[in-house]
Image (spheres, rainbow, N blue to C red):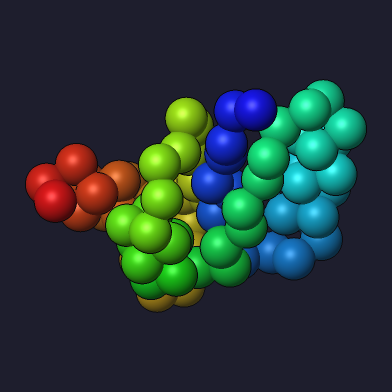
Length: 70
C-alpha cells in the first residue's frame, strides 16, 4: 500500500483529502502544520507528500526545501 503524508492546517480540508485518499486505497498520515510534517517525514518513508502552501508556521515550499536539504 502506498503511503502519503498529507499536510494542511485547515482540518476540514485535510479530512476531505484524507477520506478520499483512504477510499482510493492509500495509507494516509496527516500533519496539521509544517513543523509536524518535518518531524513526521523523518519517522517513515512516504511515497508522496501533499503539502498546503500557506500555513502559519512555515510555507509549504520552505518546508519542502528543508526536507530536501536533510
